[in-house]
Length: 115
Image 1 (cartoon, rainbow, N blue to C red):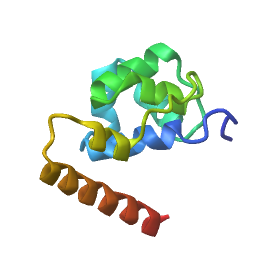
Image 2 (cartoon, one colour):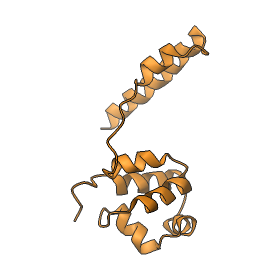
Image 3 (cartoon, rainbow, N blue to C red):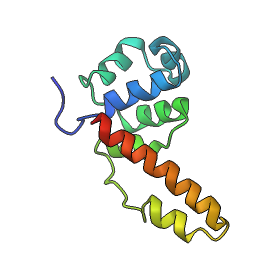
């Protein structure tokens, strides 16, 4: 039974843990959170506190705010977006901007195909 305000924080944590090639046991050691509790968070059964989310974010080397947003503790911050950020970066050459845009577009296209 998932909590309504936690639609994907647990699955996101699991995905990030797997991408980092960490077992749930190893993540538990790194965060000081028990295996069963981490498992329940990943399955959406338990609502993690801000402190636990911070520990998990540190262990997975991701932004704490990302987990806070996914857990409904923070409203998502709308940034300028990737395309405008690339275009406005003064340190990039035109060729570098073009290459980054192509890479970004390939990721977006791939994500849409997988959905």
